[in-house]
Length: 386
Ligand SMILES: O=c1[nH]cnc2c1ncn2[C@H]1C[C@H](O)[C@@H](CO)O1
Ligand SMILES: [Zn+2]
Image (cartoon, rainbow, N blue to C red; front, side, top):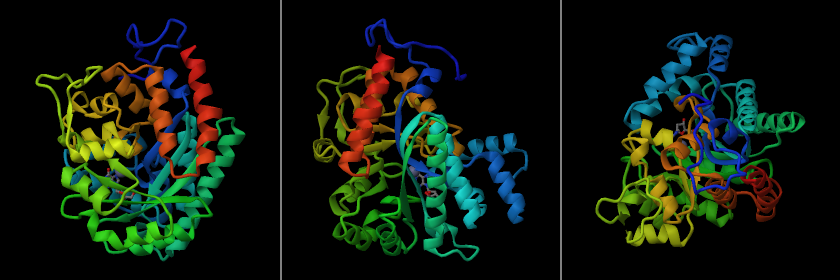
């Protein structure tokens, strides 16, 4: 889809005074992003710069355009494990405090330019120790970059609030250490914790000590679950591990039985039967951090048309729209929203709901969430709705 390919909200879903929903106008809408990986969002030109600076010899090409293409092509893998291999190059050039600070700064700059008003950006500190940084030094560098970026965005008239999530890799054995790191930095900008990496064969219950520690310290956490592995992964993440949110969570759809012949793009799913897990997720308003393009790239769903986002949204699960990895998907928040608008015919009221859903689900305090909902998100959509 070209950035300006115009399509408008289907008749009946918005009134005539509305600004049409298009990729361009979606860029202006206030958006909330809960699931974005720092090491999956570098600018290709920055990767080339950092590789030169650090003497990293293994980039597939030093041409930024071709490099960007390389990431997308290789991430279009149809499998999470193959998709994750592309991170070898980004992580390799993020091994010094200055590189981490620059990447974090540019991340905030890019999100603000895309109209994101609140973001939680995650990364795995344990992957950035190859050149001798300590875990604390890694986190400090990233938080300094986020602070620089927030100051620059505010000065440029695009204010954004950014919280940091620290991720532990699910195949490794450092999750308790990373949970302690999260708690140690809770006054400095770390707002939560996450588990990521290859899902199959690495159930979240391997990390119960970390989750116990986080709960004992009243720290919030999300778990990547129900992406590359099915319902049992979701059951473990919420039932045994007590996740506050689900990273992706798309496979919760396996616990929803639709009437025969139901169209995934329908506006109503009356008669849908929910199983116990799906009911629990919906009843407890457990946020689903869904990442449409990434889910297609990893093969979690066959294509956008069959993505369960719309079914879950219409069934009033707490759905949120996310980028996952902007570099690997050559995507932005606006583009993810535009893809959903094109596929499912969403209007401004829908995007406002997704933004409010995400803001309500953020790991910052209630009063700060309300400030953004009442002071930024609602007024922003009021202008677009007209
Ligand atoms: O979608 C994902 N699922 C599981 N793991 C992921 C996904 N996207 C990125 N990661 C991994 C690779 C990164 O190196 C790590 C920390 O951001 O998280
Ligand atoms: Zn992710």
